[in-house]
Length: 186
Image (cartoon, rainbow, N blue to C red; front, side, top):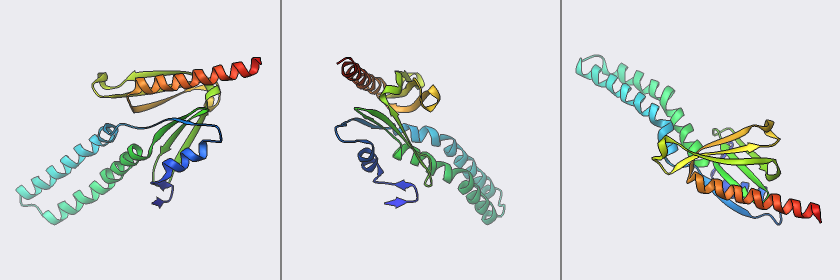
């Protein structure tokens, strides 16, 4: 299904678009499902406050129809769109590692998707760190860049098994760099 920039079948299309002949897909990882709940937790609290407001109105025999209408309008305005955005961020964002590049796909909304290919020659290093005291099986991956994208670091949060993903990416970068040095020396 395709709705503006949101394409539910885009994962395979993006993988095919960025894998040229002779290039292999090494790793495809999405973000951990808890990222959705952590990002939507504030909206859950707002929903509880709005339900409490309706309960107080019902308990005090206030005009219930107006209070429910106001609560529903506030819920749509402040909660619904943020929950949809958190769901889209969780469900349609992913990290693709091939033998030549790392592709970060960020589906920011129904109207916008950002694809960032990072060529392995621009990768200076990979780091993994834990999130939330390492209670949950996800963490952060930081890709330190030599050049391109400003030479900064790109940090990706809520990556499942971040240490294993970082080790895989580091292995791919090392193999790529060794392959590049042997062809230059020959």
